[in-house]
Structures are given as structure tokens and as C-alpha cells.
Length: 419
Image (cartoon, rainbow, N blue to C red; front, side, top):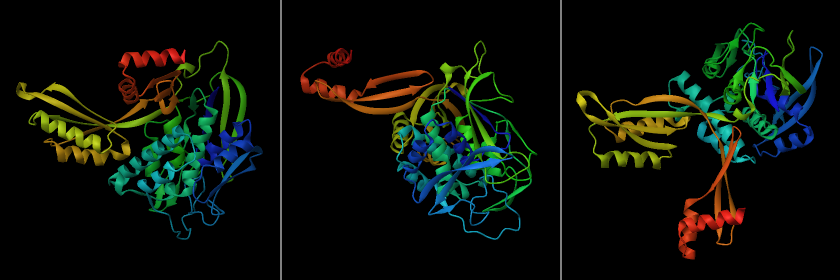
């Protein structure tokens, strides 16, 4: 099955989540799973809603019994709530990425869900970092760092994990117009951080004089949508879900999710065998021609110890025919500034180049299997129509020494036992 999101009235985290909830065969069970995520003080409630006569679902997120936007229009202005410029001041929660990451790490959810939630927040933090001109570690998120925003993002990630669409396509994104008030003052729509997250995606404006696409909505679409199409693809429609926003507008204020199979004899926007998760990785690089191999090796060890995703070197030729080394460090986008500083401090380079790469990835998990020789951990990888697994080398080596066998003999016995 495939998913198409109609975003002609923008996208907000609660609306995207509500549209997915309507697609779930057992909505009560799906809602119960959301409430079991364990987000501090958060309760999800699904209530029937109508926008311009269209029946849908509004997903209420209560934090200590208070719904977002219920007390003040400023409590969460991003989530499709029009904010008049004369609104009264409101105290915002300020949370760092470290604080948000701790909440995400404690979610009662599959590891793949936690990874997606964290990756989305890293994208948001990176956007805020670029807007405010400060390192990610120093960025404090306001509205998007509140518990209700974390709840919206977590709900979309969990529901998509359960529905497991083969591909996700969306319409161009309506952003709205006018201005919006946030913690930093009155800003044009789309707000700067939202615009950063929408960079490279098809957008349009003018449907309403208010914010229609929120930072969380933009980050979710950027992370999950694989293709954009102005019209519906040819499809065998199986179900629709309408996720309703809070505001009443002349046009139905909802995100519509279409759950479908490709129509016979037609090509979809994305082949089924290509469906799978994506994320972003930052590549930091510098050219070195005046460091000893030992010094470069030490710099690599520092980067590994700091938590780099990967560190490697490539031989290159530099000016005046000098041989050199290209040192590359891969890290999460939210960690780019920290690793760039480590490169500058531990190498002789005068500059570090940064490239943000979008990756096609496989979800990775691990489990332990009991074998006749002893316990063995297996790593699994799945996505894009691919599934594979392999045993942990350290466990195989330990069993070989313990049982007086060679490494190939241990592998052969494991393969025979699993046939």
C-alpha cells in the first residue's frame, strides 16, 4: 500500500498524525499505543471534527490536561493556529537539543521510531542554527521544543511505522501568508526556520492569511516524503483520512491522506521496490599535506571517540605535486559544528568543508539468538525492499576460542543450524 498526502491547506504535525490515525484499521488500539509512548504529561485524544462539511479527526494533545493553543494563541502558534498581532505575551518553554534528545530516548517505541523522531528534531535544530547564526548546541527551541510538538512528531513517526507504506508522495505544500507571532516576535509566513526546512521542496502561498505549514509539519514532510506530485497519481483507492486543524477557514482546513495501490497497468511515482526510509548526514572534509600519519591517526581517534558516524582518509594530489590526505568525518547534521571544531583543533587545516547529504538508508536493529555453541548477537537491516542480517563478529570470535574451532567452522555450524 502507498500513501499520498494532499497538503493544499498546509501541514501541521497534529493534522498529519490525525490523517494517519484515520487510516488505522483499529483506531482505538493505535490511540492506546500513542498514549503508551510515555511523553511526560502528555495525553492524546481523538475527537470527531468537521471542516466545510468534511468529517475528519482532530488529534488533541493535552499536556497536564491543557490542549495546545487552548489557553493562549501563543502556546503553540505553529500548529495551524492563527495568531493576531495584538496577542498578549506568553511564557514559552525553552529546551535544548540535549533535553529533547533525552525525552526522545525514553520513548516507549521501536528503535526505528525513536531514530526518526530524533532525526527530525536534528533537522529542526539545524534549521534554527542557520537562522540564528549559532551552533546547534547553543540553540534553544521554543514552540517546536514543547511537549505537544514532540508528541505530534512522535505520533506521525509511530503511525507511519505501523502503517508501513511502500512509498509516500505529497502535493506541493501550501504555506499560507501574512505574519505569525512566535517567541522571537512577529515574523512573515513562512517563518524563517520553516522556510529553511522547506528549501528545495515545492511550495505555494495565498490560500489564507495565516500560517498553514508549521516547522514540525515541514520537518515531517521533508523527512518522510519521497516524491511530490501536483495531482493524484493513478490509483486504486482503498481509504482516505482527514486530519483536521483547529482553525475554521473558508477552505476545509485539513490534510487528506490517500491510502492506495497503484492502478493496474500504470506506473506510480515511486516503484514499490524502491520504498524505504531516508535521512540526512553531514560530511565534513579537509585536505592535509603537512601532518604525519601518526598525527592524522590521532585526529581520527579523537573523532571516533566523540561519536562520529564514520571517519576515513583518501589519498589525494595537491598543488605543486605534493601528495596529501583527504580526511572525511560523517556525523549527524545537529553535531556538525562540534565535529568541525574538533577537526580544526586536531589537524593543521585552515578550513573544513561541509556538505549535507540525503541518504537512502536501511533500518538497523539487533537481537540475540541462543545457539548450540552459545549466544550470538545478530544485526538486521531492512528497507527499500531489502532485508539482510549477519552475526556479530566479536561473538563469533569468542565462540571460536571457547570451543576450539576456527572462525569458518563457527559460521558453518550457525548456517547449518538455521537452515
